[in-house]
Length: 363
Image (cartoon, rainbow, N blue to C red; front, side, top):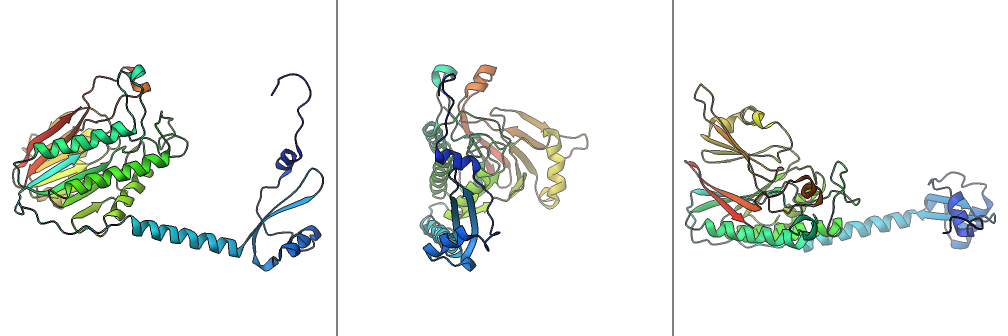
């Protein structure tokens, strides 16, 4: 469009859009001759009308957009059929596994923190690239590395920690839950489908070792979509008795294995020095029945470790942040938040002796 010259002229269709009454209603049905003619020509009864959009064109002609009960019912039925088909298709049957070692006494914790599927980083700008494919490859490579390092331990159960900004954005606008815009690789729905496929692959790999307990942590980049992703994963494995889920909306989750009590949180909630007392307050029975207690946090993408022991010789609680496999994006690179080791971490907890091994796979 030129800035100067002849006055801009709108077409008849564009004028219609300007004057269109966008409010849906069923008022003014009676006494509207133009509407009666429109309905008669199309064989539509007024009693079947759910809503009407009506406006007048620039030439004075009345226009109508009508939704009938039949249309609504058909759409609802189609939607329900599609949902039913999706659930049926995406919930395969997994037969029980006969494992060689059925008498393990260790918990294997696998914690791929802050994956940020959908994050985009250009190597020319940030020093190293990061995209959807890189995110998935690092998680799978990291998981295989941790499982390999855990060989030799008799694993009874696997704790698989999910969530924690697994998705980089939370809506169609390419922003986090609070509205912070992000550089992204691909569309929001692609991120969701890829993340689901990645998690399914991870659970399938881990269930070969031992029964899997999946715990989801709510997080700041994908507070809603991450929650939905966790429930989609649960639906996928709903027929599998080898996989259990704790995917409630609760921000802090707790898991007990023998004398071990593990707390999981994204890391953007309660202050770090309040977590030990929160654990005792929120899970007093678990607290009293355990001797070794840990908080595994995320969010910061680097290692922070501290240990509480009070003067009354109470048993300590170890709190630490997990490393992340995700790359450095443009904003973090400009701010100088670089040089942090990229890794996926895991732990081995013996049933009566607490954490006995730390597993790290670097990239």
